[in-house]
Amino acid sequence: MAEFVEELPEWIKLPLDLQHKFFQIAEEEAKRLIETIKRIDENRRVLKDLLAPHIRSFPEQNKTSVIAAVDSSRSPRFSERLGVRYGVFATGAVCLKGVEKRSESLEAGIFRRRQALSQDESRLFFSLQTTYYERKMALKVLGECDILFIDGSFYSFVYPALDMKKRGLLESKDKGEVLRETFEITEELRRSGKVLGVIKRSHTKALGGYVAMKFRDRSLVNVIDKHLLSLLMPEKSYFEYEGLLGKHHPVIYTGIANLASKGKPLDEIFEAAERKAYEPFEELKDFGIRKEGFSSMRRAQVRFLGGLPPCELEYPPTIKLENILSESNLFSDATNLPIALDLVDNLVNISSRFTEEFVSEIEGRILEAIARGSGDLESIRAFFTFLNPQKPF
Image (tube, rainbow, N blue to C red):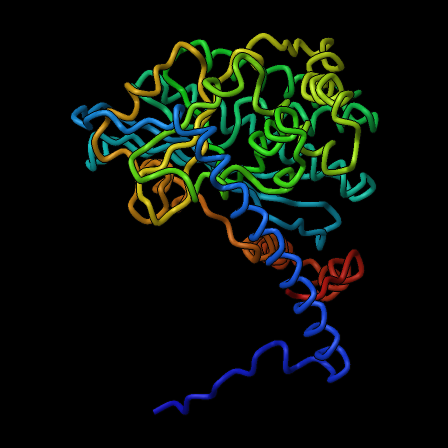
């Protein structure tokens, strides 16, 4: 019987002086967060009165349509052992009717770039390329379903694309075409009237921005909406931002919150936040990027279960959210996200170690092929090691 050995906490493995310093930092951070929690509690009643007219209950869930979801995963780190910068990605789609799986599609892909190019350039283009293949998969399954969920905001890719342009990284034809095609496919998905984006890692702070503008109160500008609404929304309820913000995109009010948190004068920040929100659409016009679709999009927070934070959805005005929420077996009890999206996320998940294993497979096949051709194995091994020795993680 194997002897059980209790592993020491990572904290104890540090030198004693570092342990004490981290304890001190943890104490200071706890005090800061306690003050934030107190401010939220103080504003709770104001928020409740403000949002109560806009928080609605779910309709009866009696529909059973074909629900699909598309997601992708990419390696969080590159491997550079073979003299090339490698990343891998996987894209998948699942179609469900109720809890019955109708179909499943999975695709694998590789990202490769010369090591001479910067890590930042590779990272930005890898993200864009993954989104491109994800949107292509979404278009492929669009005809098979009644409702389709995609991971993330429809137009989130235009912001890193703007960063690429500012760094001069969109000058090559291939990158420009990938951006153009990603946008055109996204427009087709939007126009279909049956695609919604699920913003899992939401940074929306529109409520804090709204409170800052309406009440001249900056106390909530650093608190994400998901946290605030977790305190206010009952289970099986939803909140549509348009009821509170009107036609102004929630991204603008998040920008207001960000500027207000930096102490910018409140009378000057609406226009600045609006310019920031629309900047990619102005700067990327040469790639066919247009703002009309983005400006028409709506957002909502949906809470299926009371013990979990709400799920942020984005959708075109042609979709009535009430109709979507009439679907039975739509949300997962474990995550409060669409069940179909949870399923495909589990299918395509790529761990941080997989890229190294993938590159090791390439290396092994090279060595095997050269050995069969009477090549010098030692010189090949030395070549690989010399190129870029990497510390295992």
